[in-house]
Length: 70
Image (cartoon, rainbow, N blue to C red; front, top):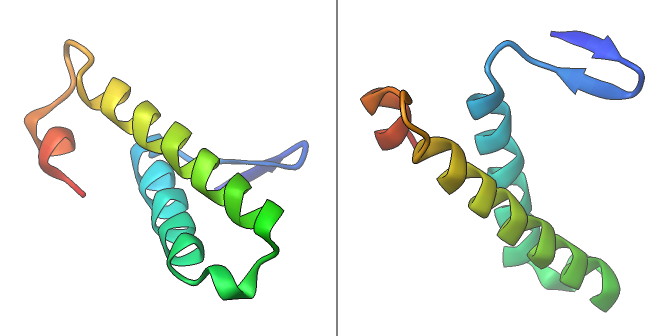
């Protein structure tokens, strides 16, 4: 993985997306660890990432493996 201007770049964006979704799911599951504003931000970011995952999965040319991988 390369570090590029503060952003982490990966050769497998689907894996990075799944990792980020998993982390946010854990944060949303334990709201007592976050302020109410942070919790709302986590929920919104999780919605956005799930939308992005569906969009990438539904693109023509995506492999069946990517579609079934969680």
